[in-house]
Image 1 (cartoon, rainbow, N blue to C red):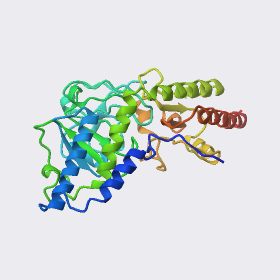
Image 2 (cartoon, rainbow, N blue to C red; image 1 turned 120 degrees about the horizontal axis):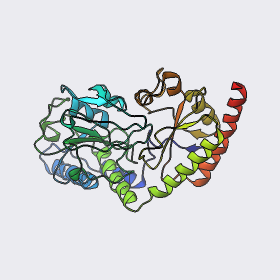
Image 3 (cartoon, rainbow, N blue to C red; image 1 turned 60 degrees about the vertical axis):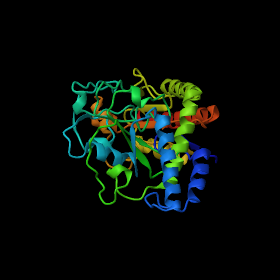
Image 4 (cartoon, one colour; image 1 turned 180 degrees about the vertical axis):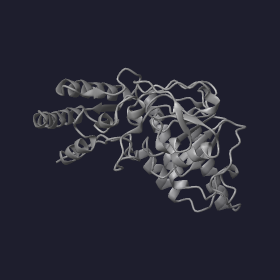
Length: 347
């Protein structure tokens, strides 16, 4: 059985450009903080990667602080501050802020005071893209970066967080992007790495892969490669909605990421669907990867107005650039077969 991977929002396959850049970085001996020739060589390589990531983000002139993840970057931006957010934020952000911002039934958030708020660019579960207000304190760019066009310098937030493995880089590396003049206290203290904002020797291998993957991902966006993915997503959406009587396509009325589909079938647990599809050879999820396996319903869907029972019956299908039309059709056929069995048992 040939498996089909449809969980790209959890993590994307490693890009060949990232693999090559990481292999190059493995040959660099020095510590970027050392003053000898080997250290200076490592430092020059690090700064080259920093500039490459900044260019990919449209953040030239901004400060890039490399971290171990977008989760860590969010903690750096939000810890110790009184910041509001909505219920659709990822747990990495929601844990630091008060979920008081209103969310409508399409997952769109109202932000009356942007300077005291954080708002994600795109949701990992529904794919819903937000309109970021001016002077926003922080935005989670993690899911949008590499799938839609981003220009940090001309966008709204004072800071943004990004992650390597969501766009084909390695796991275990992220970054905080900051406009110059922003003052934050380091979460990790020790050495003076990353302009004194994040202690610890930089993960040069991971950073190299992240920068290379970001460049390649932005090139794919600019070339319009995600358009065909969006067409496959829409094809799948139409097929599944036509198959099940009560199915709901969450966020369909809003602007969404081109690869993301969130489907809710009342009475059919999302966990059950994930297991059935896994046995059939398809990798999907019942929410964000960081919350999968936990006994709780999606706070994203609850914030959008779905009750607890409904929110527990959703799945997320997230396509990638390598997803083929045949993969989508095979999944639709398999899911529909299980949906018919579910409806027969429920009748």
